[in-house]
Image (cartoon, rainbow, N blue to C red):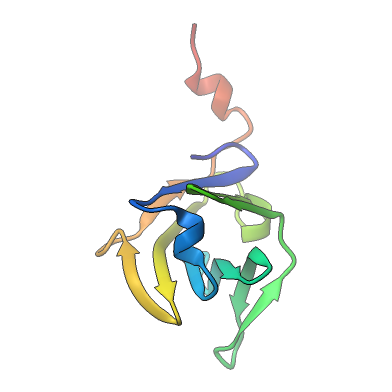
Length: 131
């Protein structure tokens, strides 16, 4: 989902998402637009963490400050501010979602082409809502 401030993602699994994350599980949104950016939800002994990371010139990923939230239990819900992605109204976000365990990709969705969403303008709700 989207609103004028955030990209909202809900992921449903056949088993409990928190169990899937475990100690070394990850759910990763890898962005093609904006390029060299990813959002990673990681499982660990102390629970889950979520970061937005940018790929540097050397190819290494580094965490960047971001307005991002996540919750994992039966399902996973993620929220990241468009501003944290460097996107404004009229731009598009394009990404894949991957599930990893011990660094190995288990699944990728969609498998062949990325999800693409347009960043809405402030009047999005008014233009698309009627009674």
